[in-house]
Length: 231
Ligand SMILES: CC(C)(COP(=O)(O)OP(=O)(O)OC[C@H]1O[C@@H](n2cnc3c(N)ncnc32)[C@H](O)[C@@H]1OP(=O)(O)O)[C@@H](O)C(=O)NCCC(=O)NCCS
Image 1 (cartoon, rainbow, N blue to C red):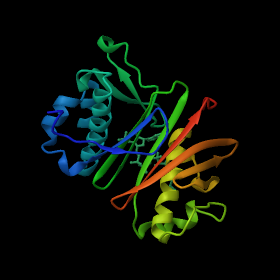
Image 2 (cartoon, rainbow, N blue to C red):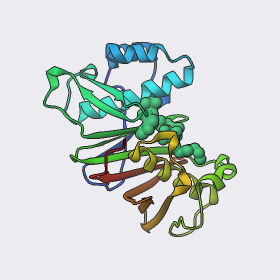
Image 3 (cartoon, protein in one colour):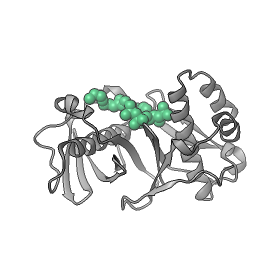
């Protein structure tokens, strides 16, 4: 079961952080997949989801993250760990007692159309945020709500790609901070300091940002260390 699904490695150059994509088209029959991958607590959460696309992306994100934990040798079975969320929705990976030695210091999830994306960090004290966004005209309408003149990207690229990169970086930043919908994306500034590498600043906080473009999707990662604990 676990061998049939292939994760796509996303090289972003951030040490101790792994990012993988899973193409939902390859998921196959989801109900038996759910039975093989979800703990009983996760199965209860899954049963509460009604919309077929939401069910698929929610399941796909957990399959992606658990496959990463399997490949990293942290678990022998996907049901030995579970995704648990804090009150604002920020996920973490919790391991069952029989794999007590396994720890993923931080993780992040994202989904967009046919892809789900997961990031894990093995650096203690670091926080990661990952986001995937399709390069599409949709973001032009929203541009004023999240982009501004202080955002800088190197070189020239189509406006829609530029917007998708900025959107993904800022959403990834909001996932590091973990405040969810309370965070204004316009309050985040992105400066590309080397190709694919960004300084991402919000308030007094500076994060390391990375991006790549894969098959018409922008994928961004933000990493912060020793961040103040959010109340
Ligand atoms: C919470 C938020 C970051 C989720 O992003 P999204 O683009 O809607 O959806 P994505 O697929 O990329 O990410 C969803 C995943 O983010 C994670 N997530 C949810 N809340 C989170 C939080 N507070 N912190 C970190 N991660 C969070 C979850 O794991 C979720 O996946 P799941 O539901 O399968 O568990 C986003 O909705 C948000 O609130 N952004 C704030 C900025 C804003 O105001 N944007 C809109 C106006 S321009």
